[in-house]
Length: 401
Image 1: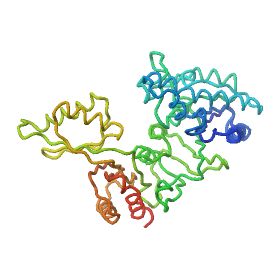
Image 2 (image 1 turned 30 degrees about the horizontal axis):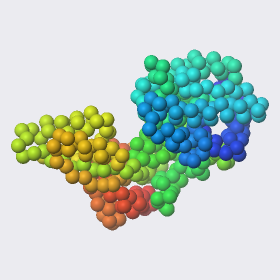
Image 3 (image 1 turned 120 degrees about the vertical axis):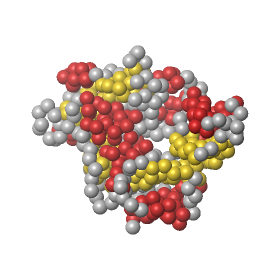
């Protein structure tokens, strides 16, 4: 045994949904502690189960649909706390010295943004003291305390960020993410039949896939892993075997594209500056400012001479429309739409990638309404009805050929 070694393991909600799932999770923890992996273990848990299960996040939300943001944080934090207490109890029943902590009790400090906080820092002492009392500490993920002492939550997938932040603060040997999958794939297998297993991927490519809509690991968690050079293993909850290794550096796999992904449903707004406007730039600054003041996040900004386009979540489209109408700003909308993307840091500087991207979408009959790119991504906005055809065409072009 590596004396003093510490690991962090995270169990998602589907790994805790049934008594059998929870017993298997306990057994995985026992194996990590009994083997040569570590002699101290921090376990981060999500709320148990999925929508419809008693303590799942979506189930809790249905109990009080018209809550204030602060109340929403309080309500949603309960699911993970229940998971932590139940898991700690089961571990003790199996002979493991275990103790449950909320995210705040574990020292997680957030920026205080309601319902979508970022972790600002982790106070190490609470966990270090707890690890002197017990060999396994179970922490409620997805939550922390703001600097003024309020419980805030980290947004969907935030338990991944909890696990990575704790691992970085405690200088853990590694992080293990248990998931109800037999592999991480180059695309969503339900949308792309040709999706292939990913054995190794860099944290940067994983982060970019996450931001583009892939539900593998929360992108903020992948960002933390890259900053701290922390290795991550994704393991099958059923077998305990490693299905994907996430490394802090770019990996040469023979493919410069790591995967394809699609984002949430959005609406595209198209706005033109009035003929009498003295400055288009000033006019568009006013438009963007009004939307931001309404608390709406925008994506895919494009400004061409006297026209501008941007996208917002479908749920925010009525708010944006009202803002523009109140200001007597004319607009047009297209939607519902979605953003389809190819991701891979290896594409940087390569010639012809955009041409292949456009040809693939054209073959699929998908119209590019807008495009945006970075050093590691190329994205196009397409109508939602064209999403599956677009993803399959991009996957065939860049990953199957």
